[in-house]
Length: 176
Image 1 (tube, one colour):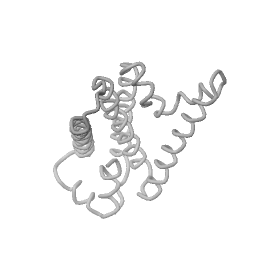
Image 2 (tube, rainbow, N blue to C red; image 1 turned 120 degrees about the vertical axis):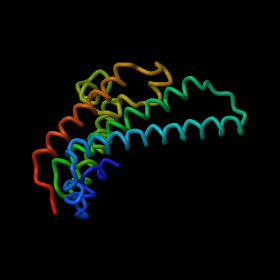
Image 3 (cartoon, one colour; image 1 turned 135 degrees about the vertical axis):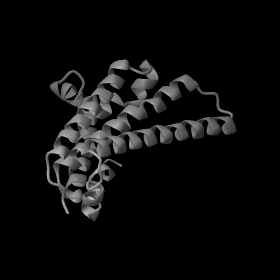
Image 4 (tube, rainbow, N blue to C red; image 1 turned 90 degrees about the vertical axis):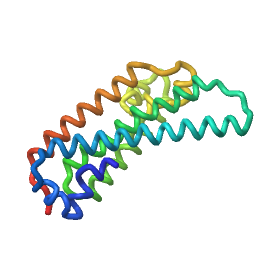
């Protein structure tokens, strides 16, 4: 979804037509970002409903407050990944290069979190804290519940990336 905010239309040549309309670049990027963020909320809501139906059908007794916390935490994590993807797409003109960078970012984040979790009481544990996967760990959420600092941190970083994306997209030539 983050690639669709700017990169897809640039690669297909549609962005120059869109930008010929009497709207600001920031309006286009912000509206698309908010639309995709809203679609993330919708997908997470469908996951929640599916979980509720599955539990009702199976008859398994589960603590729904804990499962709800795990599902709700998907929203800031996915919005953060959306914002990172959008930012990379505004930095790099070619869609395939941007996709490679964001894939490497996600894989590296996962590896940092995994190594950090395994290497307790070492500097590697501290390095693992920079991974966004550290803040979406279902086991931790089930044990501690939602952590407001994690949610606000991910949303805050997403907003910073949105602003940086707007700044970058306003100041660059759009590929034709």
